[in-house]
Each structure stands twice: as structure tokens, then as C-alpha cells.
Length: 615
Image (cartoon, rainbow, N blue to C red):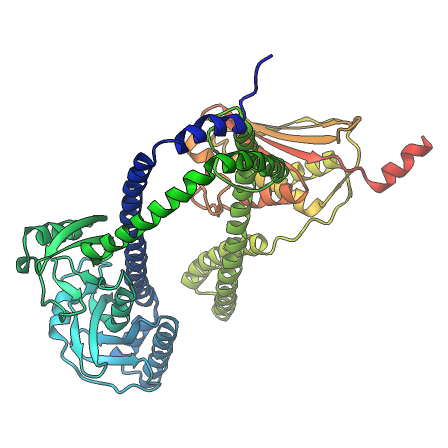
């Protein structure tokens, strides 16, 4: 009989000999471990704080870039400049008020912004909104250095100025500017965000490292931006020994690490992390003697603990091993129960004891949770995209209706004008195309749950074929049917399933530019003992097919390979099929054709289920 390897025997074999080692040897290694642990804890504490501060500052600078891109990308400033160019005072004032409200919204949302300005191409501040001022004064400032630097930017670039002292703010500010252009790519001015650098300074000074430690911030040239004893730019690589220069060189190179150095004749260690947006770096430093004092204190406590541990070891190991097995078994059983649907990282199985059983149960739980998490992420993306689609569709449809009405009125007023008739027809056709696109947007955003009624799936397929019969004949496309005549009535939403068939048939016909065939087939697996019935609907063409790269993205919203496609057809179809509790799969080989398979759970119509007992 093979003896089972268990934790109890392992504890007896390994822990007992270990604690029986001479006290001096155990104490020595414990002290060394404690000193190393103090070093590691100090290092980890420093790294955690500097990385958090670096990320926070980098997020502020990155948000500044995004906000500048958002503001300059909006048509408000362009419309404001056009109104000023044509001396339309009322419209210019209206646009200016809109810009002021926009600037106020950004100030209210971001505490790091002090003020937002718009400067025209001549360097005049036309709009300035400052935190705490509802109606800021209009100033006429030259801003020549800022304008000169911003004009040299590449398209889409953002200029970050050095720190500038501000009497109004009572501290330092940083100018962040992005040029604005006219539709003719002509430079029209700058949008400037003035960062309140005192708030960034507070982030750095919020780092706490020991009693004498402090944090500092350096720019891309190694000069200080934040330091507890020096103003900005007062310290640099040239003012310290070689060890300090090496530290600053690593920081300027964008590195992350922990390094010792000398400053003002004192040995220190510093943890540092980069701020990628501007190639800055945050550091936190502490004197070496400070954490060595803590290590000495730990050394005394370790010696005391080892003396007590040696006395209690023999008794404790038996009690510990007995009590340890009980929670391990309970934890393994609980992990088995949780393996039904959560997420975690899979671990390697390294033993065959109770911990090995726990690891196996954990891995089973991990695989199930990952699948569930993936479905949740995909659902969340579709929900967010649906909300966005609804907003965009609503904003597009209103002006389209006005444009269409205007064109119809113009054509009625001047029916004999061939130019108006020709271009009016083109405009109306394009408006109709956009309306169809918006309708798909709205359907995607407001996709309702299915309303099942008893339908004949084969009859629905033939109805859809009739809709496209004339168009298919023009393209030399033939429809083949392999429909199961024994297929019963099913509980489906006819409108939604018709839309699925229409989308799939349009895709199949578009894949047959030289003509070909499209085959419809239906089959069903009757329910058996312990097995629900399944209805299969397949649509196959012998067209150009889909490449593996395209097939990986065909269900992504707005992905399309057609010049006039919206990219929502397959996404809507997938949502409808899944809403019916089914599955939609696509198999394709480039140059040979594509097969779309729909599997639906068999749900008989109520009248059919009532007739079976009587039969």
C-alpha cells in the first residue's frame, strides 16, 4: 500500500529538524533575513509611493493633452473666428459665451487647471476663464514666446512651457498650448491650459518616507521642479558627486529603480519612477542610517522571539499540523463550489497532497471565471456602444430631416431648373442613405427583447427570398433550398429573425460579384431524454469568402469591408440570435465560400404542445 504524502508528515520531517538547530545559527540567519526584509520593505514603500505619484502626475498631463485635443477639435472656436472675421457681433458673442461655458466645465471637472485661454494668431487673449471668476476680464497680452514655440509644433502637437511664476496665483504655473487651425490649414491661434503647479507640488510632497526622507521631482534635463529646500531649477546634475549624476542620468533616461547615492556628504537611497508624458521623473529619498536603525531594533526583537520559539517549537508543530489540515480541506471544498463561475489566475500543480487538491480545484474555478469575465466585458462594451449610437443617431437625424425638407421645397419651387433637379436628386438620395444608416444605429442602440410568437421558419425563409428574388436574378444568383418539411412551428420573434435573414442574405449576395448560388437549409434535432431539442439554420454561398484576419473581427460593431456598409449587420444579428438563446457561427475559406450556422433551442408553439397529448 502506497503511503499518501500529507502535510502532517511534511511538517514533522522538515519543521522539527529546522527548529532544533543551534540557537546561534538560527538567530544569525534570522537577523540577516530581518535586515534584508527591512531593506525590501523600505524599497517597496518608496517604490509604491513614487509610482503612484508618477502615475497621478502623468494622468494629469495626459488629460491635459486630451482636453486640448477635445477643445481644438470642436467647431466652436472655428465658428467664433468666422463670426469675428465677418464682423457678426451677435453670433461671435454667442459663440464666445459657448466657449466660456466649455472652459468653465473643464475647470470645474479638473482641480489641476487654474485657467483656460484662447489666444488669436496675433497673440491677443480673446477669451480667458479663470478658476473662481465667473466673468474673467478680457486682456490684451503679447504672449510672444508662447506663440513662437507653439507655431513650431507638428500638427496635433502640444507645447508644455517651463514653470512660470504667477503673481495672480501666488505660485508657479505651466502653460500647455495647442494650435487651432482653420479649414484651410491656416494657423488661427492657441488654446492654452494653465496648470496650477502648486497642486502637482502637493502630490510630490504628499510622499512620506521615514522621518528625514523627502520626495522630489526633476524635469527631462535633470533639474529640480519640486524640492523641499530649493526653488525650481535651482539644482541640477552639475551640483553633486558622481553618484548623484548617475542617479539623475537614470531618471532622465526614463528608468524605474532604487539606487544609493551621496548628497551633501550623506549616503542616501532613492526610489524613482518616470512620468512618460514629459520625460520627468519622481524620486523619494531617505538616509541610509535611518532604516538601519530600524533594522537594529528588529534584530533585538528577533533574538527574543527565537528564544521563545525554540522552547515552544516541539509542542506547537504537532498542534499546528493537526489544525492546519482541517481548514485546508474546508478551503478545497469551498473552492470546488466557487468553480461554477468566477475569475482567477490558473496555478501550476506542484504536489499531490492536500495543497495539490486545492490547486486543482482553484484551476477549475479559474477557467470558469475567465469565461464569465470575457462575456461580461463584451456585454459592457456593447451596452456602452449602444448608448453612444443612440446619441449620435439622434443628433444626425434632426438636421437630416431639415435638409431633406429644404431640398423638396426647393425642387417644388423651381421644377424647371435642371441643375436644381439634378443635384437635388443626388442630395435626397444621400440623405435617404444616411437615414438608413441612422435607423440601423437606433436599432442597435434600442434593440428590444424578442417577442416570440408561433412561426413557420421555412415560410419565413421563403418570404425573405421573395424580397430579393428580382435583385438575385439581375446578379445571376440562384437560391437553393434544403428545408426540412417536418420542422414544427417555433416560438420566435418574426421581425427580428427576418432582419437576421435579410442581413445574412445581403452579405451572401455581396460576396458573389460574379454570380453563384446561396443555399438555405434547416434541420432539427428532436428533444430526447435529458436533452433539449435544437433547430439548425444554415446559409451557404460559394463567394469570395472571408480572410482569417477579417473573420476575427466580423462581430465587432462598425467593422465592415464594404464601401457603403455600416458594420452593424452581423453585430445586430448576433445580438438577436443570442437574445433567442441561440448561437451564431461563421465558417469561411477565402475563395471558396462562407457558411453561417444558426443554432436555436427548440421551443414548440403552445398550440403544438397542446395537440400532442390528444394525438
